[in-house]
Length: 288
Image (tube, rainbow, N blue to C red; front, top):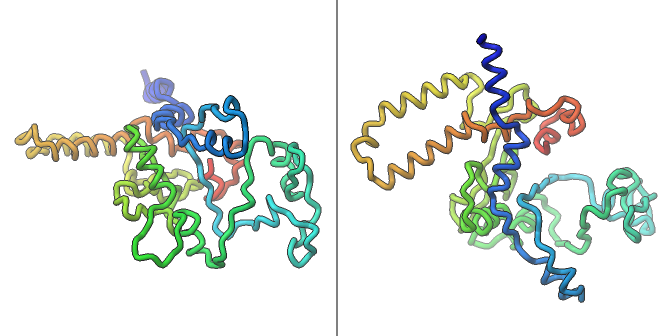
């Protein structure tokens, strides 16, 4: 069997990126906060309707620094006049009666029954950095105690404390931490996000600190084997719990480098037309 045939056979035996996503994200536990029942009871919804179990196993938060204003997207106010509503003053109806959004979002207007709009949340801070802290932590800035952001809280209570044991960290940020995204606060460093770094739009996107562009898979395996053969301390103290923990961490790191877990970040497995729909730029490819 030639080298090309061996590569094709190995590729066929490995799972795809989307299959890997289902496997690793499905391991998160799917035990989500049952707030829907409480809110429904407050709103007077019958218990039978309020007791539907949550289906989501993962959450994707898209954070738009300085993104389009709510008046230009999901909360148009054409009656307020040009000084307030801006140039987009012809909102369109959605497929949900009573909800209108900006005329530039016709595809989203067709799917308004698939998402929820929150128009009641507000604060009086005009600074992006401090406003981000308020939204991410629910606390006002200026306190001596640093509070954890949303991702860190979920990583603890719906991640590690809920029995999460996947190779993929429960809290991932693409690509670099922005503002309070990397704040675990008083929860401690264990709940900080895993930040990939790099540029997903690059020809070969790699996770910084885990994979080097200049090192092949074969060389990574050789390094792992060499490290294992030279690890005299582990051999001398086989029952040491601290060394066992370190060995487990090393094993997970190499699984992310060489195993199926790396496929989660391998956008080369996606079709070109799909990648183009997301936009051939850092933000679009990060969303994918």
